[in-house]
Length: 292
Picture 1 (cartoon, rainbow, N blue to C red):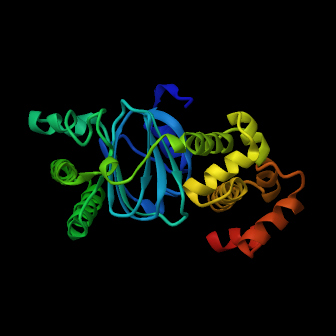
Picture 2 (picture 1 turned 135 degrees about the vertical axis):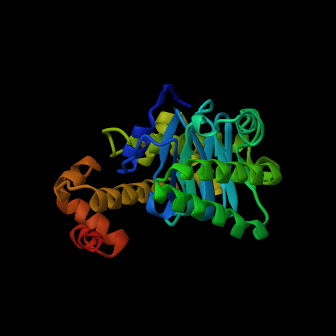
């Protein structure tokens, strides 16, 4: 995997999602409000991240691991390991928080960052029992409340809730012992990362053959592997990723529809209009109007 050596600032992470951030040590969000279906290329970030996945699925590439994420999972990601994400479903719900090491100030709290579930040599994903979901949801909701207060004692309250969430991860079962993708997924994993990188770049018109050439495999072999591992063909992945990017641009940017069409690799806006209408049963213009 190609990895950016320099740890990216948190501002870049939020900019990728067309979101703003502040200089606080801890930031909490609902996943459904943050476009967590967006694919991210492999990078190291300069913050810790904890996610509670309630709905939706995806593939997490964490160092040399490839893990399939399902509902009822906790993710603990640290700044020392590069990771990327590919959302398999558009609907993603739950919570996540990003925080700096400075959030956990005393020795007991700081030691949590050096033990499971944040240790670099352990699984970053933990499956919790269904009866713990209401408690975890309560912790994240309280974090959102304290974040909105912006009072002096809110910082201490947020420290305590983050510590409680980490302790829940310590009690949970590592996903690697439950559902781990092994070597047969290396090529599909590289394809999904390459797909994310292409849509973060300038050339968004790659075909299935182009991806196969990049991966030095036959196009039919790539298609067969993807169908086995993900249940979708190469072309389905390309179409879904292009639709996701189009919907993101239409709903979150002020770009002209023709500009979006050219950026996505269409030779003419009418071709983009036909493509979008075919797969969404609505025109780009009408879809944009529903997002206002």
